[in-house]
Image (cartoon, rainbow, N blue to C red; front, side, top):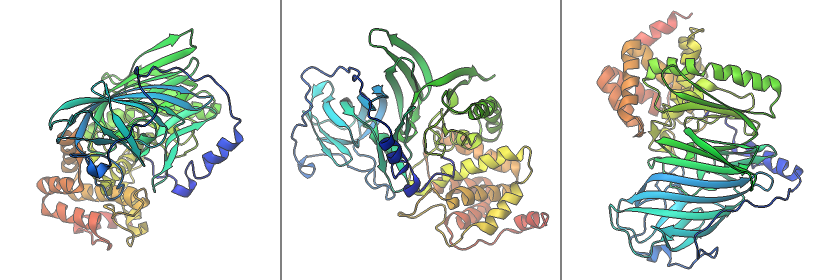
Amino acid sequence: MEHGRLPARDRPGAGTFRHVFLKLALAVALLLPLAVPAGASAVVPSSPRADLVPGQGALTAGDPHLPTLGNGGYRVLHYDLRLRYAPATRVMQGRAIIAATTTQALGAFSLDFDGMTVESVLVDGVPVAFRRERTKLVVTPSAPLAAGQGFSVTVAYAGVPGLGEDGFGATGWVANAHGAVAYCEPDGAQRWFPNDSATTDKARYDISITVPTGFTAISNGRLLGRTTDRAQGTTTWRWRERSPMVAYAATVAIGRFTLTRTRTSDGIDLWTAVQQQLPRAVKDAARRDFAELPAVLRFFRTRFGPYPFETSGGIVGDFGFVAPLETQSRPIYDGPHLLQAHEIAHQWFGNSLTLTRWSDLWLHEGFATFAEWLWDERTDRAMDEKFASTLRLTDWTHSPPTAAPGKNLFNAVTYQRGAATLQGLRMLMGDARFFALLREWVRTHRDGNVTTEEFVALARVRGGVEAERFLRRWLYGRERPALPAKIVKRLDALR
């Protein structure tokens, strides 16, 4: 995510979108039909209290920054999301088919799901009891699930998806007169589909979206195809993300887009979408930026190793949230606010290598900001100057990049001090050893989860005690760190 993310009071839902929604006239449209299982009921069945259900999975992943997010007792393997959306009424009808495996014996388990109405829940095809508990959908199978057992959950639901406040800004389903987009970091995914939002529970996705013909529906990964139902006046768009993906990196964008497919010389499919309602100057600028995308991918491949996914691209529209977001394989940008190098770098750092704890967000944002500096360095040899500027301007009384709970993680310390930490390590180790370290980091943890301590440990192996000492001071210290003589000498040469 680009560092211009707005604080909660300025984010959509806090006023911006509320004002837009009030201005828009309520449109009337027929809801698109969605089949539900025979015998399913929209009434929530009763079930025992959570503390009386034997073997219930945890209702949280235990991250202190987002203490209600995530669930325990199982791992998701695959999401099959089947959505219908009517832009005129903003009503979604959905069915989520979730394949998972238990990690313990389960008498009940939960999914993150905030808003809309649950119409039915099936476990392995059998209707089961469920209840809503704040932002949780708690499911009680008809028979306990054994440890290590594969199972499926099918949730049928409907309603108007919206935004929620996570303390870091409003996230979820953003709708306006032109369509809608899912803007989910860190916890907005639960506002348009039931899921496990724990960052350590990554899964593969199939996402199909049925919309009125004339609208385009874009999601992550590869477009498998689209089918038009002339009688219904609808088109279904089918997308597949084959690489593991954390829930907040999933997205859907619906609107009137010009969708373009190209391919890089090394076989990466590029899907780019530009909203037709944008001003011509913005559309032209977006197309120019997207024309640079193959070069961005080639450049980062030399620094970080192979691009981790089979597709890339981007989505540009008038969404109203300003800050770009690094949704997997298909970042979203709001109008002219493109920061392509930053968001593409997140495909390595954030989407392929995903933080284990939110306190380690610098592993995403510091790395992407550093990559942005690297891209600029091709024409502006100013990396040392950026390091020196950060050293002068950073508020060292602020919490370090590895922030304690209660701190807003999306701040200049996470981005700028995180990036300067990497540039300082590069100055200390030299380019050859430093970029070899980054490529090993990416290769070792591809499609997985990472921690700051793992990065520090690898730096010690490849850069010695001096590298470890440097990282500990920059990542954990609250005092302005003394610089190694090698870096001081380089900075003196700038004067």
